[in-house]
Length: 626
Image (cartoon, rainbow, N blue to C red; front, side):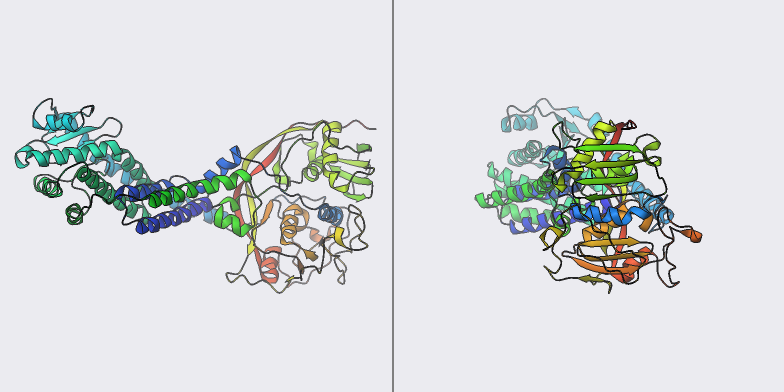
């Protein structure tokens, strides 16, 4: 589990416990059993991350295909990037100090382990002390206490044992409980008081209070540093004892007799040192006596109170499962608020599935080893696709609309050998181009694969300023100013990408819905932030960020931007990029891309790790020439 995931789980559990606490406060007139259930759910939340529930829903639920990137965007990006796509950057620049972060994580983990071990050792010593008392105790098979136990519950199999310790009467054990009765306490109690105490312990057994207390002790050991966890524990003990008090009085014990039995027990014995050993003297004694004496037999939870508790608990755990099941492409702000951590998991542009037997195919397709390895690129025109020196890895990436890091395995030539492809689509719509390419890979390259989920490093594109203000270089355009290409009058048919202007031209202007990358420059007009994020992650030769970049800015609408940065990763020492002109000289005061994002656009890249779908290549072959 990553540091971000731990932090998310902590604040989510804190928020959930606080909400349940408010519900318990609203139900202060209901019976203690209802409030105890709420506090126990608050405790369980610390053991169950919402992200795990969402992942469970994703595994067992409905799979909703996510919208793919519009074909106009993919065409524009590929055409513009063609002259600059040959070099591969080995590593992306580090945004944070990995060594420093690793040291802090190690220190934090060490402190947590020491704290957890300390709590467990203290409790283990107390448990062994009580276990020794049980071993030295003697069975009670007759007498007044035995008769009271059998009269209150004739079918009980609860062992009754007499101890020589000073501990109060209590139930020891979780799965095989034993009722310990201290020697000598019989002389201080009359028959009614003995019956009240035994009834109290039987209620503990029926409610399985030792088990629920043991579960919360695990929570306290794991989250020993969180004050709210210990406070929830005190509320559990308080409501547990109050619930038993209410039940004992409801079963027929007189309040004054029951209260006197508790007071006499406190004078004679000590309280149990562990909350998972249920006794009779726990919680605030003064408040318990006052509540017992003021007990109202009609104080029971109403129908609306039970319905409220059921609705709150069900919604708390069902909501993340449902959201994970649908894998809904909700806006970032909705996912962060509702899905409780699902936002940290990047969504693939499409579900990665193998093409079916009846999938659309090219009318004709020629695949040959590249004749010219000096340049690389692809272009589409109405009814035709042409690729020059395209590596198979790039073809797979484009066909399945995934990031380079999501392709795993394959032979060495996957990225080192290029292929020239000429294919005709006929009258098939352009939006089927990707599926036709999948079929080509299956039939000509004999590509077979399976999908897995793996944890990968990613970047999240977020706003850099706490007040949400953007940089001067990022301007949102008015709605309708730049409609989608298919909606513009006189727009060329989809798939017919016009030649973009050169990014080296200082007067270049991007077309509507177009983004242009060049050495040290990014130019765009009327594009969403999603397109910016995908481009930064998908063009490592230009941006030097060869990992998935997801949009978590919460910015909607379309934007214009034109910013520059020092191109430190391409064209060094005047060496031109493969297939393209040498980069234009950049002024010395132009910042690197990370700084440019923050200073000019008001955005930044946040390094994270996330679970994503990957395509694992099982087998692939070089195609025969035709």
